[in-house]
Amino acid sequence: MTQPPGSYPSYEVPPGLPACVRHPDRPTGLRCVRCDRPACPQCLREASVGYQCVDCVAEGQRSVRRPTTVAGATPGTRLVVVPVLIAINVAIFVITASQAGSANANEDSALFGRWVLWPLGIAAFDQPWRLITSGFLHYGPFHLALNMLALWIIGRDLEPLLGRVRFTAVYLLSLLGGSVAVFLFGSLNAQTAGASGAVWGAMGAILVVVLRLKLNPQPVLAVIAINAVISFLPGISLLGHLGGFVAGVLATAALLYAPRERQVPLQAAALVGLGVLLVGLGMLRWAELSPTF
Image (cartoon, rainbow, N blue to C red):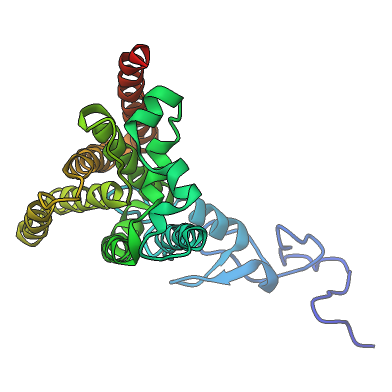
């Protein structure tokens, strides 16, 4: 009579031969090299030296600290946030272009009109969502392609280092920082749109990473300098770029310089604090302007 695979006959353990600690009905002459307890072949796993029981293997896996990046993220994670952000921006552009009946004049669409950063609309008509939604709008395909290309080039290195949640937080805080800067210091009747503030925040984040890792900052500084010169051209929001850059630098510095022993709670507190500060500045400006309308 044959036994099915993995089954063992039940019989008394012969005198002098110990039983497996997990299967008392199985006699064994094998032992775990770590805890020295008797174990049957089913309960042993090959180790660097000899064999360990499944209990010792599980305990070792729990006690071994997994490697993380300087920001506390798990290395080697697949890129997710950057492609999703690009897809969202492209989808919104397609909607605005479809509504306007033109890719080059998509700002004529109804959605664009409701979402564009218009300080007067925020203050006079109580439309604070424009501070966020404007970061997903673009004036024409060239504007969209330029920002999405920059997001891809920077984000494909930044997201794995920061991790998905941290990268998303830096991106959104940079977007909000750029919008708040425009709301605070820009013309009330000017209309601003684009992911440039968030992209500039990502550039600031890369600069902080380079400095934290003690790498050569000259290539990054050169790219930032070139883009800073471009920011002075007509039709480009210098305030949005500066606001996004400052927010990105502050958010990333909070992530990378948080002490290891309490890294996650300190990072979360710093990011929430920065978000509260930006929202608070926007609300103060809103309160200042509202009585005039």
